[in-house]
Structure formats: structure tokens, C-alpha cells
Length: 362
Ligand code: GCU
Image (cartoon, rainbow, N blue to C red; front, side, top):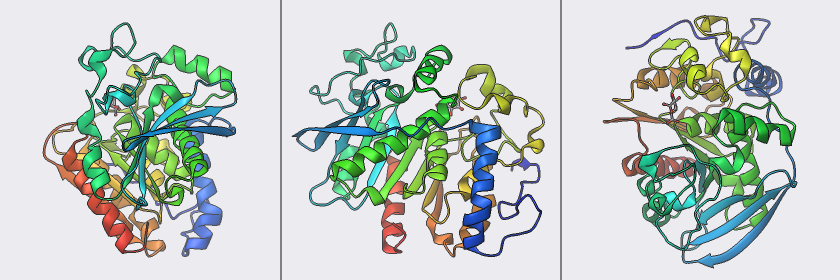
């Protein structure tokens, strides 16, 4: 059991009146909640910008896309994996150590950008090395995803915004934004979606944002903000993800800022130990995704993320799904084990996507 302070009703506006229909929620409460979340939790989104996509030659099941945004950003290198025939839908999300880390194919260039020092991932002197190849292959079981008829697209999060307080600030200055890194990565989902749509290679109206942990936080905010995103899967997303800050379990706002001061809006720091003063909370972010498919994946030993609180967040978002008559568009599982993204998790995601397609929700 987890103790959660009373969670604000996502169907209640600032006037205290409860919305009774989906149209009013869309017109009135959606903008209200988006603004509250941006103000107190994530900070602003970077400016949209125009993307240009260069589609590389097909290499087996993989196509490399170079996505360019006005000259200030290095290209975003997207690895797109295509099944036989037209994909049912595409799962898209960032990775932690470059595209070569999720697929050992030696033809994939190592990402040359700055990386967080993680010796276990073969990162040396803040750069990927040959030892980085395939270290996260289990996080993207491409064979199974493709065999089930889905496409997958992934890119290095540092191509969007380096996960470092100083480098992130430099990137933000160049783009003229004060977005926190989570918002930056969320914006990255939208820019990659622009590119996927332009490429015409996959059904961009069936793009499911997926992220593990910090990327799960970003996937949720991306889907909340960008209604083109067809659905979201947040794996072990924890604090600032699916778990409301009002649910006291594991990582707190203070913990987040102690280690990752660049992830959220500076304003969020002021709510440490007074979470109940927040206008919104993370269940509201989940509600903002309604009626689109939403999946919250949890793990039994992931106490830092807080699997009970993640479930409480999902349950507190349910009224928004009910308002749309879309309660069947929500799913969750509790994997036995720790903080990870595994083939077992993916089997649940693929089953969920199949169910959503059968129900006409995807
Ligand atoms: C840290 C951080 C979490 C985050 C996780 C991850 O544990 O405290 O908030 O989700 O890293 O991204 O793996």
C-alpha cells in the first residue's frame, strides 16, 4: 500500500465545477491542466521548428533517418525498423547510449555525442565505444516487435538534449528555450514524429510513444502535449512519470533535484515537501492522454519508482478515460523484478497494442 495525499480531480476545473462531457474537457480543462503542468512541473516546450528528414538506404530491416532541425541542433539519428508489409503501428522512443547500444549490428555508427559516464555501458571519456554495441539489446527486442507486425523507431536522447546540467543549458540557449530536459526529450518525440510522418514509411497516425524510466517521464509528457501521438507506454517511470508526487513512495521532488537539477522546471523545486500545493500532479498528465491508449508498466522491486504509486496515478486518471467511454484504452502490469525494460515487458506492450487495434482504439 502507498499513502497518497488527496489527488486533485482531473475533471474539476479552477472554478471547482466538475466537467460532465468530453467536449468541455477538451476545450476548457485540457488547456488549463497543460498550462498548470508546464508552469509548475516541466517548464516550457522548446519552439517547434521545422524538420527535414533524409532517408538512408535500407539495410536489412533497418532504415537510418537523419532528422535536421534549423542549424542549431546536430542531426537526430533515428533507426527505423520495419516489419514485412505495412506496419500495424510504430513504437517510437529514445535510447540511453545511441542506436548501436540497442542493436549489435556493426554497420550502425556509434553515436559521437557526449554520453553520461556509465562504464557498464562501455562509455569511456563520455563517448560510446565498441564495447557499447548491443549493451541494451534486451531493451528493444526487435525480432519480436517486427514479427508481430509493428515497426520500431529509436534515437539517442543526447541527440535531443544531453543529460547533463551544463550541456543541457548550452543546448537550451542555442534553441532559445528554458525547457527542462524532460520537456526537451518530450519535444524530441514530436520532432521525430514529424520526421516519421514526412518519410511516409510508417503509419504516423499510429505512433506509440514508449520510454523507460526518465524516458517514460518524457513519453507521458509528449503524449499529453501532442495529440498526434496515438498512445503512450511509460515503463518504470516513477516520480515525475506515472507516480503522483502526492504518493509518498521512493524518490521525492527533493531527491530528483539533488541529482538531476536540469530535468524539471525550477519552479517544481519549491514544492519539495509541500506536494499538496501543486495545482496538478502526475495523474493529471495521464488524464491528458485520454482517450488515447495509455500503458503504465511497473516492477515489483522498483521501490525508487514506486509501483503502487504508479498504479494509484493510473487509477486517478481513470475518470478522464470514463468521460470518453474509453476505459478499455488503459493497461498496466507488474513485472516481478527490478528497474528494467525487458522482453517480458514488451510482450505485454505488444499484446496491449493488439487489443487496442482490435477495439478500434489504435
Ligand atoms: C534515476 C532517477 C529516476 C529515473 C532513473 C532512470 O534512478 O532517480 O527518476 O527514472 O534514474 O532514468 O533510470
